Image (cartoon, rainbow, N blue to C red; front, side, top):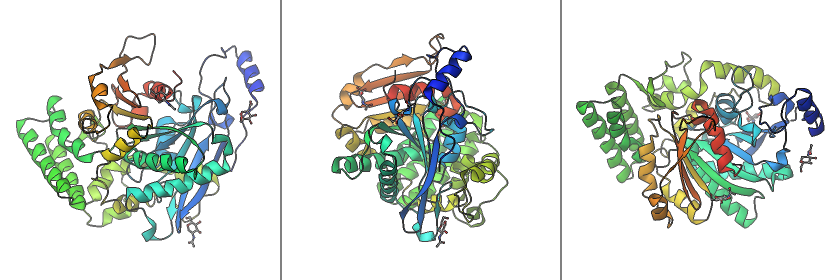
Length: 450
Ligand SMILES: *[C@@H]1O[C@H](CO)[C@@H](O)[C@H](O)[C@H]1NC(C)=O
Ligand SMILES: *[C@@H]1O[C@H](CO)[C@@H](O)[C@H](O)[C@H]1NC(C)=O
Ligand SMILES: *[C@@H]1O[C@H](CO)[C@@H](O)[C@H](O)[C@H]1NC(C)=O
């Protein structure tokens, strides 16, 4: 599955010179000029995973001189090839206009719709959905093994996994399995690190911090704080007892308590209110499942009608290989529902294993995010058993400016050995959508380009 190959660099150089542009400038190029490939991999019986790769389009550098970044969306059930690609970091936005801050200028991008059933990934049988992180990770190992075998040109290129939300939890699990597979020689790739964005690493630490965070920004009064804190304690209680499905339901309840007390604050950006939900109903919404509200809040916003029309219309037409019975986003409710028992399980110990193994781990978080607020992230970081933690904690953070000509602080960063933490200012849950320049700069810093 290949589209028009990239023009030769000589041609590009000439073009740039003709246009009077400095060849040193980093400019976004429309995707049509770059090479793209996509395909399905059958990762298990009845489970087909879709991936879409864009080769980096940098006016001065061949893709082979730039890293490869895999992007994992959250939900679970949110589509990387749709939301991450067209709403966050891909070459085109959802109006198919070039995105100025696309990551493609500094990396090749691999979008994978996972777990199976997400986006254009499809399952044939309802028992083929993943029910836990272990299955999510082993499915991805099949995909990556196939991908790196078919695209040997990427085997030596530094490979990073960037993620958002539930995608961060998956990135941790996938990262650890990938590390082992590389050690064992079963996957040939130059695995260089994971970046966990607004990640669902320790769900209960997020839930417990909602009250104090909202209270501190005038979104709860004393009464509301007490109610939200009580709802959070109930979640903690269920998690401590190992009752994870019950914890998931109580998490949903806690969100409703937040909503009632804040006049409907947006869980993805505390300075805004919840977006009106789309009128299109998913199959899940016709059931009485207690997961309905959670699904609506955490997956449906990733596939609003406009994006769905784009993916199921022109994009599907362009890709040509999407099976007729597979509609983009059509199985996402089932993906979400099947992971019910996994949502509230923490993976702090997996992050510890990554750190001990020497894998580079970056944590980044948007200042205005509520669902995975920053103080919740700091809470689980404090629980790491990693030997470098005391030194990390004692460091002072440094300011980062995405625009070198401006004194406006874009972020703060702290990094020690193989752990880095970015506090991204003025961003909510979707950091690249909210602060495109800073997100791009961060990706370049993480991948050792600045
Ligand atoms: C880019 O790198 C690839 C892989 O090393 C190589 O095959 C290709 O010729 C290079 N392209 C250009 C335009 O230099
Ligand atoms: C299974 O699903 C794939 C992808 O949706 C489709 O191409 C294939 O025809 C299906 N196979 C069967 C046996 O239904
Ligand atoms: C890992 O992080 C360390 C410390 O920031 C850095 O020196 C190293 O180059 C990073 N390695 C990769 C592959 O990104």
